[in-house]
Length: 468
Image (cartoon, rainbow, N blue to C red; front, side, top):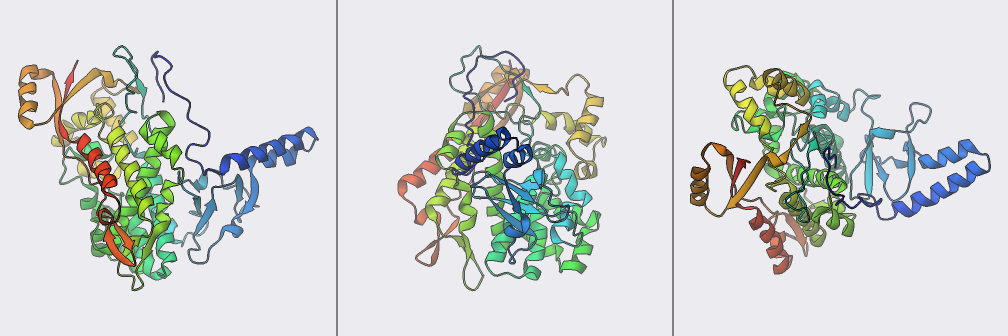
């Protein structure tokens, strides 16, 4: 949390082991104690080396099934060394997957012919590093805050971006397909699609899509972006990439499209919940501490022998993932307090989009910093590094009629109104039930079904946001 105004100390400190493997802390502390002993003995170099972790060459982590992706165990404190620069630590190049047993490493620069280099170092993909995953969303307001508690926030509150999310999706897709017997040639077009599934996300993220929902949707513009940068043509020659087929996968069609949808949800749930739980106590943090390896559910995905379909092998772990995702919607994504300023940028961009100052091409080729620069020039008093969700209040109604009656009473104080119809809880996700595939709802208990459906119901409503 980055509060910039005074407020009572109400946040409990996030536990050291939040997001880590449950065995990591013990191993980490043991290595630190050993390192201190080495330093006391005057063996400074050995001691400092121990602080960084156990030296582990990448070669020890290689798997011939997916040679470009190295799996790094998270149960111990490791210092992973690359093999191309005298054994230097890979450092920030490690791709972290919270609440799981594994992190990953993919070499994106040395082998320029590699599959991952093809998209990850392209201009079109690189801009995703400057598109924030959660935009203007802020942490939920705790129930224990009284009405006089007032907090403002630095922007953005959540720092992870679309680049990291998309790379994680491609990595999991690569490993899952490789483990299920798909050859490098077979999976190459699918990995490229998975890595680029968000490549047409407009600058400003999800809230900006609402400026022109039909024309700014990332699924609709997926092909446009790949063709504009020449990627579709190049990949067709190199990897047999079929743009029409890839577009159908991005729309979640066919078995690979369904798999992409599942992996996408696993990855954003892991990253979003890690960042939310880091800054604010609540259901998400508590659940993740109780189920520290909930994201290992990705390892339960298995194809049928004929590779025509896939399902999860552990229904209970899948239920836990969907429950965590439901808590994210309830606590953050559909939480009215967290969404108070979610459409702030949309309101400013709308007139500039309509008069041609900001175009579709701008939004699909530029990034958040560019957008804020344009808006700062047009609205110098409105674009600030600090936001105050208390500027707006909100009310929830059961019917649209109640919503309209309330709006009529407040008149021009109304900032916006919206209808939230809920979200898909994932009860139709496939699981193996005695070697047959069935939807999850047919395998788990009635109480578990009602728990998920109850969370969905709690988010539904007609909302009004108004200036206070």
